[in-house]
Amino acid sequence: GPGGYTAALYAARAGLSTLVVEMLSPGGQMATTENVENYPGFEDGVDGFELGEKMQRGAEKAGAVTAYEEVKELDLAASPKLVRTRKHEYRAKAVILAMGASPRMLGLPQEEDLRGKGVAYCATCDGMQYKGKVVAVAGGGNSAAEDALTLSKICQKVYIVHRRDTLRAERSYLAPLEKAGNVEYVWDSRIEELLHDGRLTGLRLANVKTGQESTLTVDGLFVAIGRKPETALVEGQVEMGPGGYIAAGEDTRTNVPGVFAVGDIRTKPLRQIVTAAADGAVASKMAQEYVAGLA
Ligand code: NAP
Image (cartoon, rainbow, N blue to C red):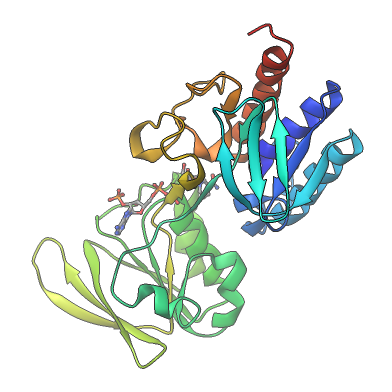
C-alpha cells in the first residue's frame, strides 16, 4: 500500500537495496477506493487503484524491486532478518512492516459461507453485482458512509444498519447521503442472524434499546465495521498496542531494532493514505540510520 511503496521510494532513492514483497497487486486498501478525494494534489480525486500503480512505478523507477509472493514467515530477531516466502528466503538488514489492515467480520454463523453469496466487505469491489437490488450496509463509520454512498448510485435501495442512533462518520458524508434519496437508516439495531437459502435473503435484527426483533429483506449485506491489522506474521515478535496494532510511534520504530511499522498496521491517531505515505518516508529514514549503524 501507500506506506510500503513510499518507504520503498525513499529507501531506493537513498541508495539502499530495496525489495517490496507484495502478495497480489499494489495499492492495498487504497486500491478498493474508486475515487480518493482526500489525498493532496488531486483536486478532482484520483482512482485508488491507479494511485497504487503510480506509487509502485515511482518506487521501481527509483530502483526498488517488487517480488509478487506471499510472506509465510518472518524472523525479525535473526541477523540479518529473515523473510521467507514459498519460493524464496530473503535476508535484510532492516524490515519495514506495511501489511495494513483487513475488514472486520460480524462474527455471525454462516458469515464466511455467505461471503460472495450476498455478504460482501467492499462496496467498490462488489457493488456492481447488486445493481438495481436492495442492500444493507452494517456500520456507522467513514467506511459505512462511503460504502452506502457508492451503493446508492448502483442499487435500488440502501439501508444503513447501525447499533447507535447516530453515525460516527465525518459530517461531510451526511448531506450526500440525504441527497441520494434511496438511503434509509435503521438505527439502534444489531444484526442477529443472516437469513439465507444458500444466498443471503435478509437480516434478523434486534433493537438494542427495546429488544424488539424485526426482519429486513435484502439481496446483499456490505459489512463495514472497521478493520483489523494484519499482524499474524509478527505475533509474539514485536510489541502490540491497543486494538492489536503494532506499537510504534511517529518515528515508526517498533521494540525490535531494525524493524519499523508503517500505515494502518501501527498504533496511530489517523489511518489515511497520506499518513501511511508519511510513515513510509519516516521509516525509510530510520532504516537508513539503522543500516548505517547510526541508530
Ligand atoms: P471505524 O471508524 O472504526 O467505524 C466502525 C463502525 O462500525 C463504528 O460505527 C462501529 O460502531 C461499528 N461497529 C464496530 N464493530 C461492530 C460490530 N461488531 N457490529 C456492529 N457494528 C460495529 O471503521 P471504518 O469506518 O472502517 O474506518 C476505519 C478507518 O479508516 C478510520 O480511521 C476511518 O476514518 C478511515 N476511513 C477514512 C475514509 C475517508 O476519509 N474518506 C474512508 C473510509 C475509512 P460504534 O460507532 O458503535 O463504535
